[in-house]
Length: 238
Image (cartoon, rainbow, N blue to C red; front, top):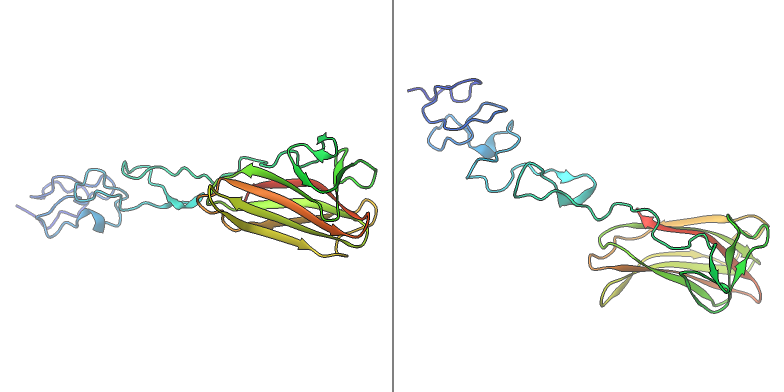
C-alpha cells in the first residue's frame, strides 16, 4: 500500500487517510502516516470542524468592529462577535436646548443660575439655547456601555470677555467613578461677537468595563452678569 501520495490533490489510495480536507485535499486526520500533516499544521485548510484533536478553532480572526471580541462563525466553540460599541445614535436628551421646564432645559439638572436664551444672535440653531452664569453648572446622566469610547461636542458663545468653561465626562459604575474627558476653555478664549459660536469636541478614554452611566457636566466661571451660551450638545459612541 502507498503512503507517499497522501498530499497530492485527488489522491484516494493512501493507506491511512480516513478523512480529507475538501479545500486542499490533504489528510486532516492521519495520526499514523508520516507523509500527512496534522490538522493545525495545514496552512491551506481554513477550518477543521471534524477533527477531534482540534477542540478549538485554529483560525479565529478578530472582529474588525470590536478588536477585543473573537469572531469565528464556522466554529461552534467560538461565539459570533456581538459588539457593544456600535453607535445607536444620539445618547444625550434635549441637546439642542429646545425644551425647558421654567429656565432649566428638560432632562438636564442645574445648580446655580441658568436661563433660557432666545434672543437673535445668541442661539446657535433652533429657537433657544441656555445661558449659564457664574459658578453655575448644568449636567445630565445618560446610560452607556462599558469598554467603549465616546465623543462629546457642543457650541459655545460668551456674553462678556471674562467667561470660562469646563466640560467634563465622568463614567459611573455601581460603586466607583472615573473622569473620562475634560475640556477647559479659559477666560477670553470664548468668542463674544454677536452670532459667533465656537465648536468644541473631545474623545473620552475607554469607559471602564463596569461603567453603566456617564455624567456630562458644564461649569462656568464669569464676572458679574457675564455668562456662557451653550447649544447643540452631542454625546455618542465614537
